[in-house]
Amino acid sequence: MAEHEQLDRAVRDFIWNIVEIHSQLEEIHKSWAQMLGITEPQWLILMAIDELDEGRGVSGIAVANKLRIHPAFVTNQTKKLESVGLLARLTSQDDARFLQMSLTEKAREEITKLSIKRQALNSTMFAGLDEESLHYLNKRLVSIAKNSRLASKKLSIGIL
Image 1 (cartoon, rainbow, N blue to C red):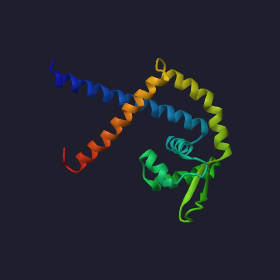
Image 2 (cartoon, rainbow, N blue to C red):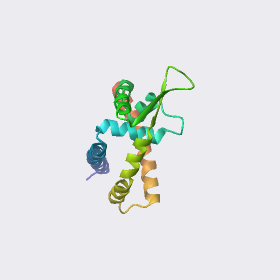
Image 3 (tube, rainbow, N blue to C red):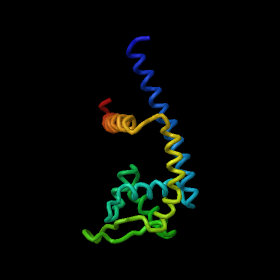
Image 4 (cartoon, helix red, strand yellow):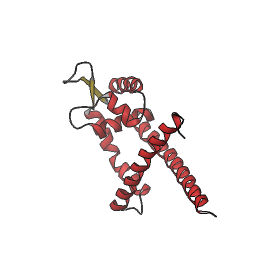
C-alpha cells in the first residue's frame, strides 16, 4: 500500500473513531440530562455555563460560541432552564442590553450529586491514559479542530 493510501486510511479511521466517540458522548449527555429532567441541549448549556463562568455570569453569545449553536436557541433554552430553577439570568452590570447567566444553587447541588458517577464514567472512558497522555492528546485535538475550521471555511468559499 502506498504511503498516501496509508495516510488516507489512517485519516478515515480517525474520522470514524471521532464519529463513534461523538455518538457515545451524546448518549452519555442524554443520560445526565434525563437524571436532571432536562434535554441534552439544556444539559450542554448548563455544562458550558459551568465551564465559562468565572463568578460574574456568562453571556448567551459566549455559550452559543462554546457550543457552536445559534444564540437564539440559547436564549430559548435558558429561559426554560430558569423556569425550572437551574439557571439565573441577570442583567449585565456592564451593559443593560445583555443578560449574564449563572447556575443556581439547585443546579450546583444536582451536578455535585452526579459527580461521583461522572468520575467513575471518566475513569472508564479514559482508562489507560494518564494526565500527560491526555494533555498530549488534547493539544493534538485542538490543532485538528483549528485546522478543521480552516478546511470548512475553504470548502464553503470554494477554495478546496
